[in-house]
Length: 363
Image (cartoon, one colour):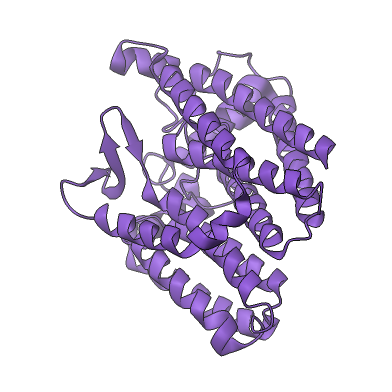
């Protein structure tokens, strides 16, 4: 298990280093234009790295099993924060979404904390209800009620992408935990219907779906991001245009250093660059699943499973959106995209994984 921990950590370091280089490349010109400092986003990102490392080390030095006692208080705190962020003058609104608390130069996104709190809660629930998890009343419904409350609060921000990621990871944890497939299928059908209603009820979500199906129907509007992303990836060819030579980052591709940084990697480093990043994620996920498989403690097993799955889900969705094979969701690329809360909580997740893997060396 020690070798797995080392490889997992080195894989994360490689992805973070790629992120530093690509954040500078994708944001330098924009930062110089807006903030008169081409290193503006890189310097802020280094502060996120330091915060993430400090919290990861703190998590690694603690006993992860103590999180079981904190599972419900953490979830309650997450719910309170999700409510408070919707209060005017407390939560910060950007582009119609109220998702952040602002503290000076830094922002905190409570939905990221809610994802972690939800994973810890479900892992503890499955571990506690080992004999009752297969029942509808005592196994599935309590988790569905809790997840429903959290999902409603996240949707109110609005943040459909995070809501879907929470639901997907929780469903997988419950399935592995032994909840009968017929119950999960029923809940899935209900969730699919609700998702359909959520999409058709909001014009901007419908525009995203239409843009996904045919971005060229509105190339200057809803399809603009997808088209520019595909142009970036397609123009990179096999070897790319060269590091720093992207054209799409020149105010063509929105969110080039955040949600669409994978597209800039494709343009500047080509197919080889994107394939290398994908390979690193595949290796990371494979190593994470090895950690999961080697854990004897039931709580640690489901906690590590949830952490690996949420990181894998975000990576798959981000890459899928950048390539135009999934509708736009607004999920960052783990360890690579610029972003405070999401990046810090990704590193905390790795710290937890390393902690669990270390404990697994002496079951």
